[in-house]
Image 1 (tube, rainbow, N blue to C red):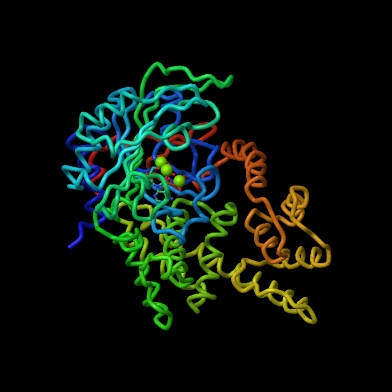
Image 2 (spheres, rainbow, N blue to C red):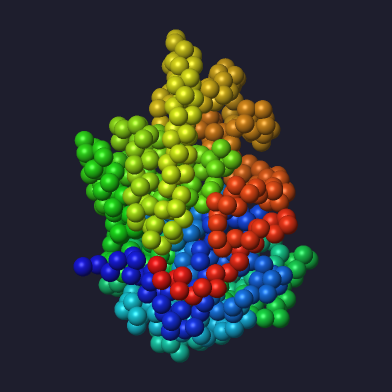
Length: 507
Ligand code: ATP
Ligand code: MG
Ligand code: MG
Ligand code: MG
């Protein structure tokens, strides 16, 4: 019988908390109260950012936790990969341990190695290690120290691989704390040496753990200077670790997902089963849809429990609507399936994140509300579309998230001979029709014209960053009550206060 995700998570926490004297800090909500530069909390370190920046004194110097992370939008946007591979998710849990000016490279590597190879008993022949090999562009030399630490732990040369800044130098932002990182990759095959495939996006040779050594500060003039204290920040993806330890081809076959895949099939038994295969020839739309739906249901359930409101958060609203549409078009059910499936997530993760159970009626109410709005809007949009199709040969829009204003914009642009939706038009769509990135992308898709989404999003993020930074100051009491214990309201913002109760980590 496979070791369960719950046992894997608990083993990690026990190792650092009981064996290595780390304090447990509970997961922060996925709303980035401490950091207006990200759309969601996307790593365990977000809640500790002010400690690295030196503006907050830590209550503990060694901490560990499992953090709810979401990578939708912003610099680490994985939404477009989800479903197309077996290891990137919109929502995932990041196990992490930190040293705030306490231990550094040697101890961090030694503990990671012991945990993986002795406690979890992963054969070293399944692991590859990457380290920072220096980068002329940054003017920084190779991190020889880290390389030699791994050597002394017994990692052979052909499994110890240098990479440049893109893969092995971590920076918080344009300025601020930064440093080299070392990453641990897991080979699902483990038959022959495959070092040349590390960092090549293979689904059977994936990165599992990133250990960042925060030892520099990047100044506004671009120069990099040493920090007065060295810190460690690590992140180990729970889903990927489970995939490795449970010997599965993808995270969707682990017990963090398979109950959802089964629940989808149970509710839609006329649809073919999830094949679980990952060969290129096995690729099919139904499997991809199973993966997207299972992934998104976890993401939206967690977001709703943390008080993210779809009407205020376009990214969450998109994910929710994508689920409604998948239920309709692929699984031949209506959107009420989404609410049904959210119950399974609460059951699977509620013991670890009690806010899921506490806020279950809120999760349901918001899904009901959003579904009602979605259905109304979609009915009108489809009617408009049908009317406009008469005498015209229009594409099928069933799988698109259309609204009446979307149809209106399409009608306006239909006879214009466009080559692309350029920045100016995109901005007009955003400003006057309220289009977000996805809506513009979908419009470009059905008009069959080009659209440079990346450039547009970068521009828009800059604009939004300012307003988001301001909005952070006005979080009302309703949300404060929702977040409950663990939060302190200060004059102008929320500050996470550490849970001093060590027993709390006993899930
Ligand atoms: P990748 O290169 O696979 O996209 P990453 O380098 O972006 O991963 P990090 O920012 O280093 O990831 O985060 C630390 C760990 O979190 C990763 O080693 C991985 O185990 C996990 N992780 C990152 N992104 C995801 C995701 N989208 N879904 C699941 N786990 C993830
Ligand atoms: Mg990534
Ligand atoms: Mg990576
Ligand atoms: Mg990484």
